[in-house]
Amino acid sequence: MADNTLLEKVLSLQDKYRKLEEQLSDPAVIADMKRFVQLNKDYKELQPIIKAGLEYKKLLGELSEAKDIVMNEKDEDLREMARAEIADIEPRLPDIEQNIKLLLIPADPDDSKNAMVEIRGGTGGDEAAIFAGDLFRMYQHFAEKRGWKLEISDQAPGTSGGFKQIVFKLSSANEGVYGVMKYESGVHRVQRVPQETQGRIQTSAASVAVFPEAGEFDIELNPADIRKDLFCASGPGGQGVNTTYSAVRLTHIPSGIVVQCQEERSQLKNLDRAMEELRTRVYNMEHQKYLDSIAAKRKTMVSTGDRSAKIRTYNYPQGRVTDHRINWSMYNLPVFMDGDIAECIDQLQIAENAERLKEAGE
Image: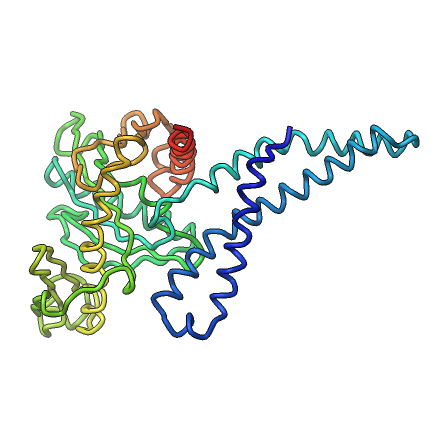
């Protein structure tokens, strides 16, 4: 049975879509870059809704014609072909309707952005830092599989390997990275047997924070509010390490946020990277309020301020990874740690979509 109300909702957006199309070709709008960026974002968000709606309308039209043939046509061959078309179209409609319902719910505002990721070794000393390194490699391989670009901003190596902390940016020209990676925010717990414990299982943890990257039009920072310090790089970076003041530390005085970048040999490149991260962290003070408001409604999402929320356990003796938010487990931990995490993220997205539909119906 066709959902005409659903079709009306989609088609009512066509006027808005056409108006946005006209505005984006207006020289006055093109000259106002901030407005152009926002309108282009709105236009791209409407595209999949309009496309799905037109496909739905086309199928409903074909279904109506086929039913008319069955009712009124005398040629039995034609009626048989129409019955086959009805049998093909009708089972497809519920999935299309469900997809349109999801598309009509406003997406989380920052899903289309690139992502800044921070991994910190937590409880467990050296073992936690090693695990933080394992998580970084997992995301590195995942990014490679999806064709994303990964750029490290800052890192503090652990004494026995891995990282006490590592900050990096994930970007893509083809998909919203934050909308995929946001489910990774929270505490990741590992259970395994380090050599020095002589067979005893040790539990340690690392925290992951994922932020949507703020564009230059998302937030304006007053240069007078930023203190810049230069220092010698102390990590990777080639021959220039410890000889030139290429590393940059920025302090946002009103908020107290401090970021630094020392991965590039060029001071200007480090400054650009540090400014990107600072903009993102200041922007995310507001984004955190949004996350706090939805974290209570959606078990898939963790507030960025809640670093104690345990989301996943990696059990090496059992070869198992378990996501506690959706009670999902996979018994092939080596493959998961090699970056094959898409199935888990897909399941989290399905769970979140169900929660969003429930919210919309309340």
